[in-house]
Length: 270
Length: 153
Image 1 (cartoon, helix red, strand yellow):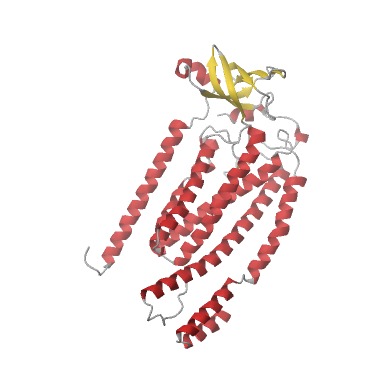
Image 2 (image 1 turned 180 degrees about the vertical axis):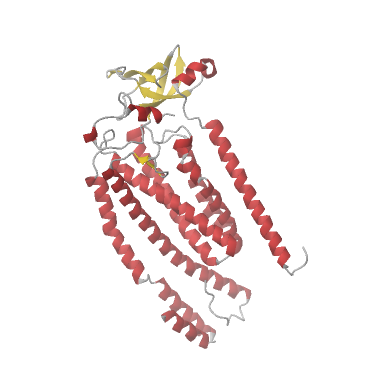
């Protein structure tokens, strides 16, 4: 609405300095977080507190683990959202490979950063949970090995991106990396069922064969998962917003370097 | 290859090459993961698997998985000697472990122990807990041993 008006305004000015000034105003305007995103962010605070209350206070103790079960809510919810983040990174990457829109690459990066964050948190939470229950911080069973591999590949994703200057090639190569990481997800998800692991099996079978978890615990876990998902989505949307500005600045810089004298063209929009 | 102009055919061919390359990488990755998981990731063996071929595991550090047999646990808290029987319902072996039992260690709990056999006794230096995927409030009380046993498979 407002953006439309400004765009036509910009087209009227062919003067380079005016255009530069316009770009700066445009950038600071764009840097401002939209109202709906602010509301979402503020709403996350009470939701997070509610999730923490359910997990730390409201949920009953476990018959075997006692209060240690409370760590599970943080660990499992974060792990699931980490899986989701990896899956969406691959999806955005595949979209970029398919139709080559810069926007898809921006979303892929935003999701990938959250995938790395949530997988790292999964391992930290898992170690915290596993030391008092399983009596070890770490062991190389199938599930843990695959998760470590996932984190390593996600780090590789960002190394690859840092090494390639051409935005198109960068997006393509990193998309392939993301798809490879996503290919390990089903193995990871079903690792405890397919292989002998120290990691416990799933308590919630998606094929409908049952939930081996008390209803209050299930509710707490699902609530925590939804909140973790909303945190992930908020961070991703915010990161993608910054990513769009980044991509725009990068494109403008490239254009200026190619044709310094003829940079009268319009604003490159992503 | 045909000069600067990129023909439609060139683009299609490039896509095909990329696609084939991508698919090749995926197949290779899947194959490698499958191999790794099949060969090296038999995380533990069961007592009856050991009983079938004890010579195969002679003088080798192994992981043994099973349940703690009921009424078999002895713990000497002066010199931290823990002994119990590990069983899979078919075979059971005595286990010697130095150290305090972990918090979730109890009768019928799933365990994975690391160490080696010494004249029929498994001498463990690492005692890990393998708990089942059943989470319930204490009011219920009972523990499903069949489910625990299945969780070892």
